[in-house]
Image 1: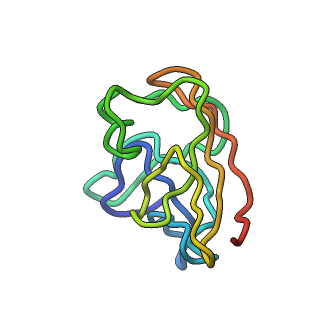
Image 2: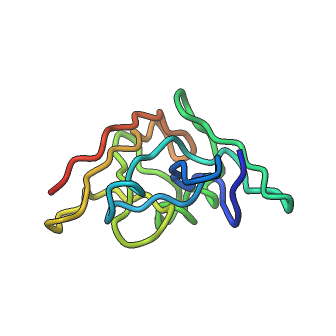
Amino acid sequence: MLGADLLPGNAVYMSVGNRVEKARADEEDRARVVGLCSRASSPEGRVDIQMRGVLALTVAEWDAVAGTDGGLKTGRRYFLSETTPGAIVATAPEKVGNYVVAVGIAISATEMELKRGIPHLL
């Protein structure tokens, strides 16, 4: 896949031209998460996307995309952010007009079982 400026753990969607972009829960097309980046995009724009299974990243990598301190919180569900492109959050969006999109469940501070959901409009 091709995409630019993507970090490990960023939630992405497919855009035109077979590219991936940072997903966000404030617009239907951008809320269609296809997976999470398993590593940062290369200088050439190549990126690896994980669509299912368990994604293991470092505590620092999860902190960067989930806004956490100390990695993921075990047992907590994570959702696509409605404000920060590519970010995931532990609280489902609540603003009318945005989308709730499940991303996965933390099974440890460094591992998430991906459980992508379809976007649900609020």
